[in-house]
Amino acid sequence: MTAFVHGPAWALQGLGVRSGRYPLAVEGPVMRAVDRLVPGMSTVTRYVRQHAMYAALAALAEQRAWDVTACRRAVRRAEVLLAALQHQPETEPAWAAHGVDRVRRFCGTELDLARAADEEHANDSYSPRRWGFWDQYGGPAVVLGTVAVRDGALRPGRHPCPPAVRELFAPLLSLAAHDTVSFADLEEARQAALGVPSEAERDWLTDILTATRGGAPHTPGDWEAPDRTRRATLRILARAIELDGPAGGGYQETMRSAVAFGEALTTDPVLAAIPEAAGWRGVLLRHYSVGAWRRLWAALVAAVGSKDGEADRSAEELRDWLAQQAPEGTVRGLLDRLPPLKDPAGHPLPAERDLLRDRPGVPMTDVLLLLVGALRSRPGHLPDDVRAVFLGRQRRSAEFLDPTWVDGLLDDYADRPVRDLAARLVDDMLAQSRRVALAKLRTDPATGGLKIFSRLHLRNERYFKTGDEGDSDIGTRLPQLGFFAEQLGLLAVRDDRHTVTAEGRRILETTP
Image (cartoon, rainbow, N blue to C red):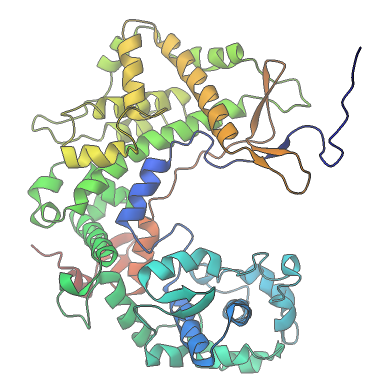
């Protein structure tokens, strides 16, 4: 007897498909280390003025005993008002307020504040997120101590907003009670606009960012561990600029020049005295391996067609895609041709930078970067404190696709053709992407079915994609930290070069 099962009626057939983030899950070690080394920064925070505004809002919320609903309404309206101050198209790009493009739609003869900030129809407002841009500033603000959250409502943090900073925002926040705001009234609040200097704001946030009080020398016992760590990272960045600013380029590359490579970490009296500098060497070196996996995976997915096209691929075809790009010879011979990893004194040389400079945008370059990372993972190559951060393990043994995993492949494939190793890396990426996707499998409340987060899928032993993967490097938050320091007058850009100001040298104690 044959039985047919239909249903369940409340669930649609098949898997729901969503784009996943971090498809190989290789980013964790770098992201965790950056969390520790730059507390209170994120890759999506840009302006110190936003932090000051939320702190002023928190002070007002405590004064008026606002609950979570009132706080959310005030946040949304304040963010719209801040953006409206920059709504003119000729605004300097460096000070383009969050959400300004969407706010312009509500700027007619006056600002329609109620509609622009309407949370009931958030998709038609300045931001579809219920809390607007507080969602990206809130976590950092709590870590910095400028705001606390109690029962969902904003309250002053351990570094409460000083009266002078509250006065800076008083005209702006008073307008939040109105449903429409004339541009004449808005102009009266221009002192709160992005890019308008405020000495009170600068002094207060400089103290918080540098763990000092009133410009006096840093006293470690007066500050909590995240404050001390953040100060240490800012000191390392400032010292790196002084050592390598003319050649280093942006903040991240400057940090790499002075900290990731060369002898300065042990010979420079400032860097050698900062324990966190070793952590940054580990992070920046591991960052190369993480970026290599991300680019390699993105290139593999780019070689696959959609489910409706003719370019779906079998695993064998994907192995051939990379194997055919591999050079002739054995893996051992390829290792012998790598740039030198250390100088005679044992200091790291910029092999990764050299590879990216000489062969950019080539998948095999990313394979070479993985090999360099594997060699750097070997015991004795890096000092123990650097190696611990470089590995960034959550368990003692090798983890999928980490540098020691690749090092194990080097042992297995040393005397085999490079193309065999390339094919194996494809197999490992496909297997890891499947593991990650299955680990994220969730029930979709909208359909009652299952939802899988992945852009690459397998059907009848052939792979197809629902979209391309991003290949950008994950953030280290150093550019954001540097821009914050610029806004506070600790760093500056002169003739396209980053410099440390006299005030920055004094407060950060970068002079030996």
